[in-house]
Amino acid sequence: KVKDTAQRASVPMRNKAPEWPSLFCFAHIMPQGPELALMKSHFMRRAGVFACNDQAVFCSGCHIALGVAGSGTFHTLSVPKMPMIKGNVAIPGQMTNSWLNVRLFMNIFEAMLHDGRFWTHDWVVKVDADAVFFPDRLRKHVAPLTGRKGAEAVYVRNCGKNPYIHLLGAIEVYSKEAMQTYFDNKWKCESQLLWQGWGEDYYMEHCLNHLGVRYVNDYKLLGQASCEFAPCQNGWVAAFHPFKDVNSWWDCWNKSTSNR
Image 1: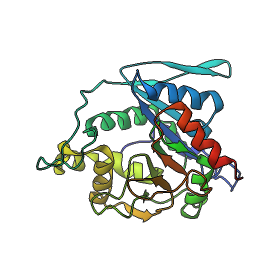
Image 2 (image 1 turned 30 degrees about the horizontal axis):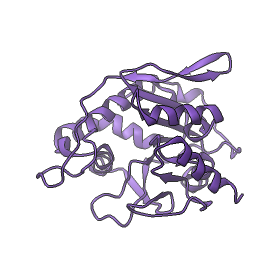
Image 3 (image 1 turned 45 degrees about the horizontal axis):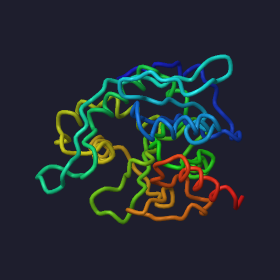
C-alpha cells in the first residue's frame, strides 16, 4: 500500500467549517500561450484553483512564477515535457479527437504524490485552466458525500448525455480514498487497459471502474456545451467550460457571481 506522504494521523477530525469539505485542487498548463495568462489572472484575484484550501499548478518542463504569495512567490511545479499528439476516433483504439495525454497525467499524479499535500484534504480536484471554477459551489455538491472523517473511495461523473464518456476532464473530482485506491493499484490500469489511444479523463474513468471505485452522478456540476450545457448565470454549477482567453473567462465569472 502506498504510504501517505503527509501524516494523516496528525490531522484532527474537522467540523463543518466554512472551508469544509477540504479541497486540494490542481491544474496543468503549458509554458506558453493562453493557459499561462489565464492562470496568472486567477492567481492575482485568488480565483479558480486558488480559492481552494490548497493547490498546485503543474507545468510541462517549466518552473514559472505566477505571482507573490505572502512573503514568497508561488511557482508552478515542473513535470517532464511530453510529446503531445492529437487522437483520431476514426483510428481503431483511439477514443478522442483531443490530446492523447494519459502518460502526461500519470506523471502529474506521481508529482502530486511526491508533493504529498493532498493527503490532508477530503477531495482532490483536477481543473482545466480554461474552466471557470467555483470551489465554494463544489463544496456544496460534495458535502453530502463527506463524513467527518472524509469521504469513502468515490469519484464524480459529470456528463450524462455522452454514451462513451461520463467524466469530462474540465473538472475531475476524486475523494482522497479514491486516490489512495488509484495509487495502490494503478499498475493494474497501466498494464491491463489499452490506454494508449485515450485521453486522461477517459482513462481515469475506466481505471477507477476497473479498480472497483464507486461513482456518483452529478450532471449539474459542469456546464459544457458538448454535454450538460449551462449558462454562466447559473449559480449552482461549479465549473463552466471552455473559456480560453482571459477576457471571456472573467466575463463568465462576473456573470455567474452577479446574481448572488
